[in-house]
Figure: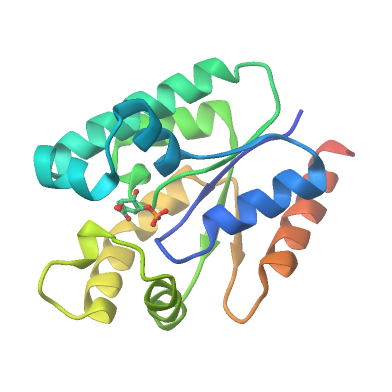
Length: 177
Ligand code: S3P
């Protein structure tokens, strides 16, 4: 039974790696940010603007619980949002319900990727430069990612396919699948 949750900073590649894993392992994959938007009927930037970060975290935790319940006993690859680990009960749920993989990246890699993606990330729009903000968030969350994770993989200089392959090799060692 493969039930993987991917955690890591924004720009670490969780969504694309989850999609690749889903395709290669032939397992359904979901993106928690997309599920939040679907469940709340709004966008993440609007949710942040209307409910603040704490309102967003509450919605994120509730949707994580719903998705976990909907897939109980079934295989799933779940890409989470970068800040899900800041909620202790979400970390506990990830540890209990999934094998959690931390995609580790340097700030330089993250900054390059979030600039290239040009998606709206409310937590990066707070005055300071992107690198400084990513560096602060990364440092503040490191112990939380570590706490949530069963396994970690560095992504710097690797393609999505290479990261997915490393994870698949680890999964196969665990499950013999
Ligand atoms: C966040 C990361 C985002 C999204 C929200 C908050 C964070 O997801 O959940 O903007 O706190 O790091 P990605 O990691 O998929 O960008």
